Amino acid sequence: MTSLSATIKDVFNEPSCAKNATKSEAEKKKGCTKQLQPGGAAGGCAFDGAKIALQPFTDVAHLVHGPIACEGNSWDNRGAASSGSSLWRTSFTTDINETDVIFGGEKRLFKACKEIIEKYDPPAIFVYQTCVPAMIGDDIVAVCKAASAKFNKPVIPVNAPGFVGPKNLGNKLAGEALLDHVIGTVEPEYTTPYDINIIGEFNLSGELWQVKPLLDELGIRILSCISGDGRYNEVASAHRARASMMVCSKAMINVARKMEERYGIPFFEGSFYGIEDSSDSLREIARLLILRGAPEELMERVENVIAREEARAWAAIAAYKPRFKGKKVLLITGGVKSWSVVAALQEAGLELAGTSVKKSTREDKERIKELMGQDAHMIEDMTPREMYKMLKDARADIMLSGGRSQFVALKATMPWLDINQERHHAYMGYVGMVKLMAEIDRTLYNPVWEQVRQPAPWDRPGDSWQDRALAEIAEEEAEIAADPVRAEAARRAEKICLCKNVDLGAIEDAIREFGLTTVEGVKEKTNAAAGCGACAIKIEEIFEASDIVGLPTDAQTIAAE
Image (cartoon, rainbow, N blue to C red; front, side, top):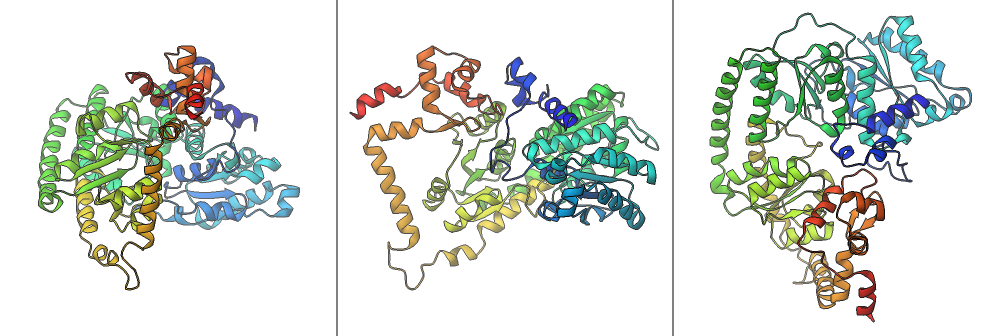
């Protein structure tokens, strides 16, 4: 496990990572050494993250070395799509048992590799390490090396047991496996000045296919997509691309940055989610390719395609304007999606009741203000009760979010549309935005909503469970509003740093007591921003406020007395 520890430290000392950039030099050297607490892997462990990142390679056999439950939990856990082989949808696991725990599972793993090669003859096998074999000391690196030599076939170790960290770490460890064992091992049949890599794109619901025809029209070849609808030999020859586009930096920024270091392939972070984003990404791809030797007329062709596609998209979206007039959308997502679809929603005549910014950067928030005005309703963290009340009070007519929030909308008998990774429709590129508007229209005007809103025959006015729930919320809000001390306590109790469990009050008190003016100072005195670093943006916003609102702890005690 020594080499794995070194790999983890290297991964989290990532100079291109926005979160890592907020840390001090001392913190960067430590890496993200924070251990998982019990239950900390809920929502995805490192193994799960590695499998998510690599399973969309369609012609590879994905072999999970561990108990059968690990493969059962992760199989087909995203809606990635393939235009070729379906081997990636076949489950392979060593299914180790109690005997293997005692005597070791390495022989079982070697035999599994042999059986897969004899029956399926894939171009490569990815072997995923899980918790149990890692804890008993199975050396999958040695087994994979022996199997590769014996069968003359690449057998790639993916050393990402679940206990080492969360899903995001697993994404990066999967990227390290590609960098160490795959990328640069195969030469492409030919190269062109228009070859690009797309990194961190998983072709959910076939989204990549909504953009690929435009790239084909421009003569831009996707030499490798890591990993949506990808092929082993394509990713193995990715080192010959002229430029790379990073779609999800949280997943695989280490791959893009190290390919730039090793092979001189420049990269940028972009998105095809949204009309403006799609245009900007096409321009940036063309700019990098021209810098690497492509003809300058490429940019002119790109601008022509952009003008045509934008005109078509806006014309199609305009058709929905009369139906969307006065309709309000609550957007509960994060990152670039917190603003990238706002312009399209507004152009279609929809009003934004609010957009979440829980996972958004400072740049994301500035873009929201540009689009929605300085008084934009940006939601840091809305509780299910607040979300329910907002929908029930008709402050929004539809909610766009991930699957975890759908039940709040359904309880409020309000339309809901999934726009996260579990979705069944593709919303990428120009045609994707038009598809999104079509799905919003279908959802808003589905006749089922009028039916479910009808009171049951046995309900008495004001006595349904919804009415009682709203009454409880209103009563609690009134009590807090009538008690300044309680209201102030609730405000100060807001969690700013979830990693270290630091609330707003503790940060405000530290700023007053020690005269702090920097995030580093707050980190030193309160330990906030000493975990993942994401809350550094919130702390900066506290400093930017005209003054620190609220009473320090001692003053609160006096007021309460």
